Image 1: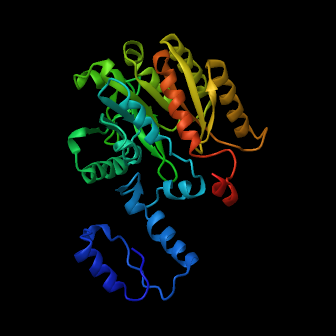
Image 2: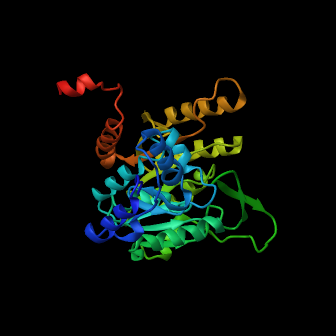
Length: 339
């Protein structure tokens, strides 16, 4: 709430007359005149920029102290805005579960929560993120829809890893040779699904965001990809040449398991194109050249939605709906009046 002089009376009206719960009054700011620039600054600083109570699709979650999602979404209007549409896709499928690998503090969970009827299995290895994830699950209320686990997802379950934190809200796993208190349990996607007694055909979506280790997670889901019909959405971030080779092998695996359509988005959320395996490699080559200094930096990674043939039309229709929210031209006031 932002109010001019006499805001105490406005608050009283909200609480007693309009019956608005007190917890919904997020901010009281006493300003002396209605200045739109001032109001915008107050809103941006205290609401949009408040990482401890950030709102995603109407849901308030605690992002922690240094999460960069608010600033990115203010700068790039399409950033992480496709997830509600992915949730909408799952309502048109026959499964019951969404697997969120690299769930962070629950921001993707919040984005899809009101747009799907599925239950969630959320996996996050970083202790700080996992603790916030659990708190945010509690804030959602219906905690029976969410199972959370702290683990690394990998196809190499015999290896040992520990967390390596990056800037902001990023982190990835780092291989180590000895067992320490920092080692986090490893699981494969297939093993996790089986341990929960879930049939592969009951998984609607496998979402992966592990800062360069998404190919590992794809290989950890071979049985799901072969025997199920899950949509697959991953962040194609390549830091090393070894990861580059892994992604190429992962593309081949997906094609072999009848994933025939790939839909690519740049890392700002803007839809790029529909692709096949060779186009995926071409886009990855393009991104890699930006890291070598050969060309200017345009986007640093890309996201991919993959599906089998039976879901191709579903994906195409939802992507068209998503892209339609961001028209290719600016509509002027005169054009709106004519309509």
